[in-house]
Picture 1 (cartoon, protein in one colour):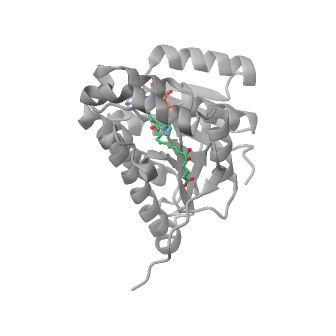
Picture 2: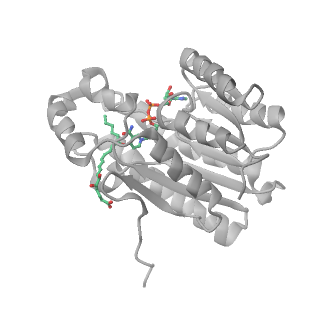
Length: 262
Ligand SMILES: NC(=O)c1ccc[n+]([C@@H]2O[C@H](COP(=O)([O-])OP(=O)(O)OC[C@H]3O[C@@H](n4cnc5c(N)ncnc54)[C@H](O)[C@@H]3O)[C@@H](O)[C@H]2O)c1
Ligand SMILES: CCCCC[C@H](O)/C=C/C=C\C=C\C=C\[C@@H](O)[C@@H](O)CCCC(=O)O
């Protein structure tokens, strides 16, 4: 699948993994709506990208993904601006064990909401041309990050939801939309800094040194490698319901599941 002429929407696209994904999409000829809560970082990012890739290839839409009406408007505005939608990356995420209800809203509820909105704009079921959705989970879903119980739960949820809807979409619904999940290990972004603070880790902040030892043990990846994985899941048309893992030890690889048996 070539990205020329394609249109993508990336949530949490103003920094970190999302921004790296946006840059790779633009480099490969797509037009991109970067949707992010953070107005100032979003505007700065858009201005940098205009300098790098030319104006009119990228728009910034300020939006809290937990506001269902605003998220719906963000999808609508993207289609109005660029005329179509082909790729959606539900990437926005937080690490907040203190306000754990918010973590569920951002990391799981909004990913579900974003997937349903993406299907409304891309699925053959709605008379559209098809496309691809990437939902961002984490290696925490496999290794359960001991001091992030709610974060871990949300990332398990993203995998379960995405695999189930992918099977529905490809095998029963004939939506023409592929849905894949990406699970990075530790990545060098602002999210990792949240481990230092009580306001984000709550009572688990006392384990911050142990957390840092885990990062030293497993290593910390660059956002550009995660963007490479994203691009592969977007362009490889054989991938639907796939769960990609990216780690320092094994690089980009896929999780394998036992086939269902009675
Ligand atoms: N950094 C890691 O080690 C790591 C590892 C595995 C998975 N992930 C996942 O990757 C995704 C991106 O994380 P990151 O590391 O780039 O983090 P980051 O904090 O650098 O970037 C997250 C972006 O999401 C935006 N955002 C946060 N809440 C939002 C909301 N309610 N509405 C809209 N935008 C919002 C932020 O403004 C920010 O621009 C997350 O889902 C995260 O859980 C990160
Ligand atoms: C404040 C912290 C934010 C955490 C962000 C992130 O989502 C959490 C990641 C948690 C665990 C990462 C573990 C990584 C392990 C690997 O590098 C690896 O060695 C495991 C290999 C297993 C496999 O490939 O199947």
